[in-house]
Image 1 (tube, helix red, strand yellow):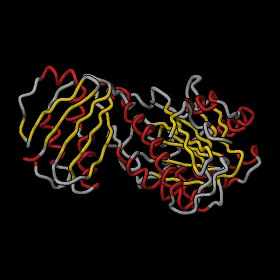
Image 2 (image 1 turned 60 degrees about the vertical axis):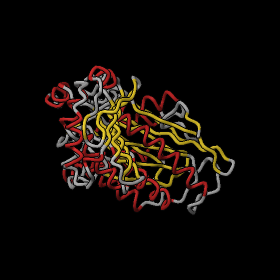
Image 3 (image 1 turned 45 degrees about the vertical axis):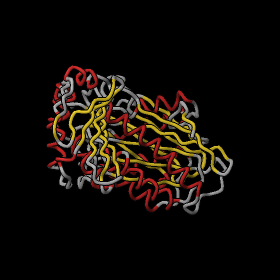
Length: 407
């Protein structure tokens, strides 16, 4: 696998565009389009929140029932959530407009929205934006960057990743972009992720692979414990790489799945690192677990602990908060056997051994915890399974950003 500089346009046959359509105040970019020259097999996973935004309902129907997908239209600024039948109608009108200008069926167009809940989309602005983007669609790196910028809300940086792999002697590329900074929680954690690949792969296998990958990537991140109404992960595969179509779980399937997992881990970590107001990416590794599920439950409990997140912000090795969060996770373990370490680019330090503090240097611990990326490793000494979760620190700015979100 080769890591490359790229995003949503990295794979063969995919174009993108991003513009300021006028949905947001000022001149901020707020609409993006992805288009494939060839029809795509599509896979998707969606929010587990019972309150689902209109575009989530639209995309679920398209992904599960349409023969193919060829385009995605995404807006930022307004979520199109809790908007009733009018919101669903606007999804249909957006897809119809895109279908008309691209020359493809309405049911080959996916839509996505992110932003304020409860507001209706300015549909005429949205449809005009679709028409404006059509001639701007491009394969270039710059077009991919513009699209990644156009789906941002409170994000402070664009989020992209891309890799190249070999499948049966053919070069296959996978590229993606995502957005997410707040309302992020491990439950198909507001986040949107779009991944494109020129691999030829069976639709059912692609969906199965994505479902497994999501559990180890987006479902293992948290910023604030809020599961959004709009969470969507979409993968489009257009087959233009020319590899023999993957129709069974063979070696090519495993290579493709591993590369897809890598891209989505990169995107998920970028969401966690860019949590609203965050100053540090906080990674938690649970090792020595009996089962993968036990390890995942423990890791997620720690990254969602507000007290632990506040301690990371203060560069304070308050390990009791970590052990406490593990204790109320619902997973069984023996606290008296836990070893805990903190590590970062500044070094690695053992904090507790067999559930009791060791004689460590608070000064060294603070130095380690002052880095932009901090990891806590807890060994529960019960088996060989592991799990990793990603979160961020909790800062004053998180409250400020969300107190002023609609203004």
